[in-house]
Length: 133
Image (cartoon, rainbow, N blue to C red; front, side):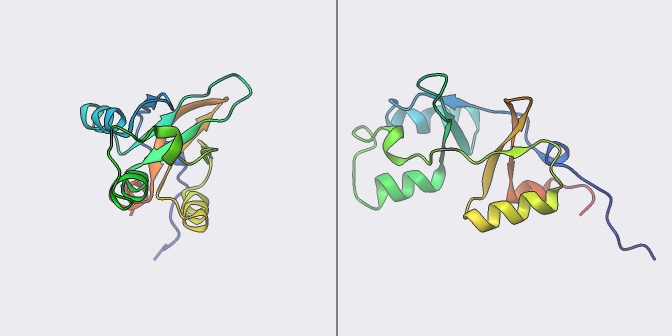
């Protein structure tokens, strides 16, 4: 019995949708984008070419708006985002994707190929959307 799994890359299990938001958007506006796009994370746009992308996840809204009891209309995305966004190469083995995400305490990251974000990968994608699991 062969118990070794076939190679799978981040590209094989990623969600192809990448949704961007401006860092000056309010938390309320960002959540509205997430709802309308059915996205669990947003990539925060660069302010200039040398800047880094950021990322805002659902837990950032919990940590930065709900727990401190702030209004979603008074908090801007740049205040609660993680920056720089940690991305994974499209060709990275899913074992290393899982290891990286677990080590840095994230559950989702953008997938990068040729300097562009081509999708998003989450820990749940590695299990629930993985046909080899």
